[in-house]
Length: 77
Image (cartoon, rainbow, N blue to C red; front, side, top):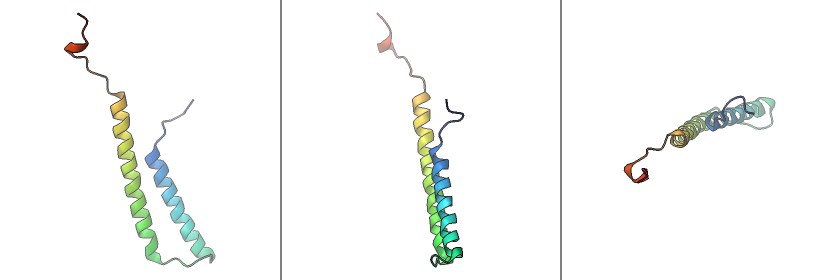
C-alpha cells in the first residue's frame, strides 16, 4: 500500500536538481571543466519540464475522478 500518491513532477524536479549537483561535483572534483553558465539552462529547463509534468498529472487525475453526469438518454424507460 502506498503511503502517498505518486507525483511525477516532483520526481522530474528531483532528478534535474540531482543532475545539477553531479555537474557541480564533477567540476569541483576536477573530473571535467564546467562553465558557470551551463547550469542555468539545465535548472530552468528542468523546472519548467517539472511544472508541465505536474500540470498534466493534475489534469489527468482531475478528469479521472470527475463523476459522470447522467443525462436523459441514460434514464431507464
